[in-house]
Image (cartoon, rainbow, N blue to C red; front, side):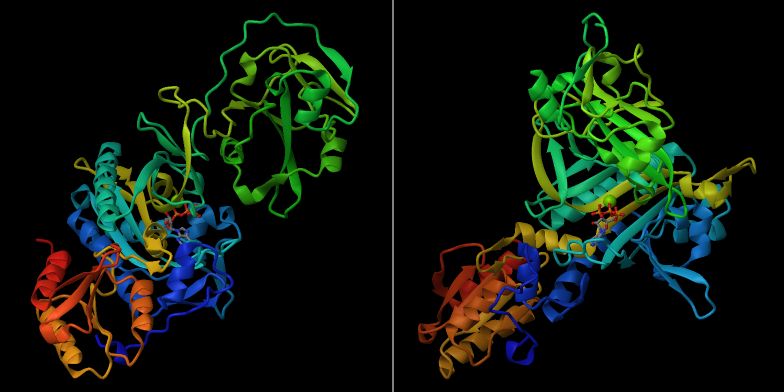
Length: 573
Ligand code: ATP
Ligand code: MG
């Protein structure tokens, strides 16, 4: 492609809204353009890279035996009502109505649609196992669309769904997808970890996330040398060892103005580990009004993992929030800053799993200005639910080996779920076995954020001058730059090199624009073409400059040698 004929528009300035490298460089290199918040379009260079990424995904999915189909992004509400998710999905779901007032959504994911396809198409065990996938637009009206392609409201996802006869079949389908994911992200050149994940609103059990390591990522990752890795959302907390102390008599103490764990621990001269912290929530009904109060208790120095609490309660995130203290107090006896478990009424009490093992903790006394010392589980209070509520963090013991966990950040680029019969059960997707007995199909679902992966690659492959695309994803592999404009010899040699590379099957740009060398080099660096061949003052001797984007040094070598080296780099030796 000749740059003089191509639409390319690199930006000198950093666009105001862009904070992270991938957003900045994809905009500056002219690869993407914003339409409105969280909605982007792909320009010629960006679209080429996007299609290469899609092609890698497609090749590996096909090789893994999955079959590509294409479903509509528009989905009727009926399917979501059947699965129970029409009500469970929050404002992220983009709901629309047709002219008759019928409800639809723009698909945030396609479990329902694929389950519907399979219940209509599959009836016998002979048709299983089956894995169907698509590469298609998804819509999520994110609360905070940001970072360009990383968290957008319209994005491309590869979503695959496996259908098996039984759990053993699902295990195998899942394993095959896991291997395919490794190959996909390896081919993209990503540095990633695979973490155990929260299966959240998807339901089912067994889920992993592929997470590209990057500071700009939104996932907090905990990992350990022993191989353990998990999102901090999902990492199991490790209970403190049970205490052997004798139970001491309960005692109310005056703690004026001590509304925080820090202040009460300081006032009483005790470590925070000897206190208990209350977090108060209200569960909302359909109409948005509170229908139930929840008091969650963790040891004073711990942080509550809200996801674990919501999952334990079985309440979707948008139906629960921090309680209005006055309203909750009137009904349950809680007192802001002084809430403890003893004497609390008319609310659900959830205790962290280590609390029953601990002794003589200090908790709020349900009375303004007072705490209660020597509170003990069993003797003084009980809980409706006892579950792990702890948010794990760096330095906490690894749940597998006990060594301190390391902390990092990452970008979730893909996720695998074992769904089991969650959807096939509620939506009646069944097959008949050899004996004509009916069973629900056993499902898995597997997503890859294709556009987010493109951003993740830029997060890992950029420098101060722009993007450094890995060869597999570069919009073009080589750029040939004649730099003495008006110089016939240089122009002719550049043209020759360009033609030879093209004939050999390489994807090549010829920067034949009438621009200064500085402008050409800046653009080539910004858009991240892996190899640059510069044809300049030694063109008459047949000598050119060869420079890979990821190396500092440029080499002066004969043109034929440059062509040979470029082809080697593009196609491998
Ligand atoms: P997140 O936790 O980041 O919101 P998710 O877990 O809700 O993502 P999934 O339902 O697992 O997302 O979707 C599959 C993949 O789609 C994700 O692994 C991610 O790569 C991608 N993805 C999800 N939401 C977005 C978004 N708003 N913009 C771009 N890609 C996204
Ligand atoms: Mg996910």
